[in-house]
Length: 387
Image 1 (cartoon, helix red, strand yellow):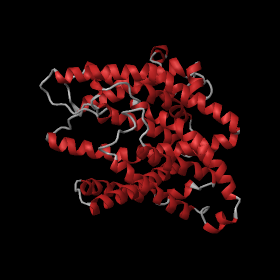
Image 2 (cartoon, helix red, strand yellow):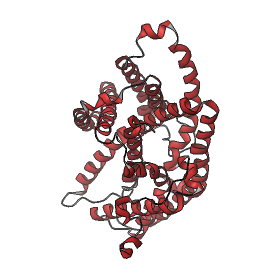
Image 3 (cartoon, one colour):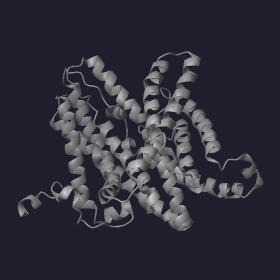
């Protein structure tokens, strides 16, 4: 991979790991010295911040790397690559990890109903005890399956349009105009998402594709695709990265406040604020990644290579730990479960996936286990005794 893409690959892995943080809040941890009401407000705000940018940025990066693979391998090899990296892992993961996740949550759900304690269920599993099979945290792969042929079609259409005089006159190839058109498309698709918030099924709940969410996320996938085709210079986002992130953080609670009103002006303002904050998050995070992670690093490369597997299996691991420590809402326990789950996932990747056919399926090739992450101590405890 070229050096200019190190930061983006690392950022994509970071979006995966943020999913573990969100799902770790299935039973709300209790922040010390705060009332239950303030706990919910703070954790809710943290969740909203992450939810605002995580999946849009992930799909943007997926679109970017998908376009890169198509340009690198050609049409046929690209489709084979996507089949091996997306469709096959989805089917296998759902039949194993997915079903196990649903069964474990039903155990948690039964335990909650049998106690008088008040727990807040993670929205990803609402009413799971009465539901049939659903994509749960694997839904992003399900949507990517539909994005790929649609993006390829747009790609060939784009090649034709790019060769026309109209394309040059419109100025679409310039970054500023491209962002303006993307913002317009983002606002338009967000209207469908906010409209479907309570009347439509979210992606993790059903295998029925929600048109609003589909179009919304495809806007970001398509934007990522175009940034590669048009050779967008992401390094320019470094200049104002911190300012963009701070501005987005300020806008998030304002959006939550305006969303609490049902009037049409507040509804329109909410959508506008959401999109402005979303793009500020996206370019702010891309800028930060360009500043600090746009260089070769064996540790970051390892994290990037392991992120796909870790995200696929983290849910049953988290739920199993929740069952073991059920009833304890300690904030310390939340970090303990997160660290323990991450450790178990990484160890499983290192010994069961990295140099096996599973690793080849997920990452395109097998990697050696001889990797001294953090000195090798926490990956292989035997090294402690061998010294």
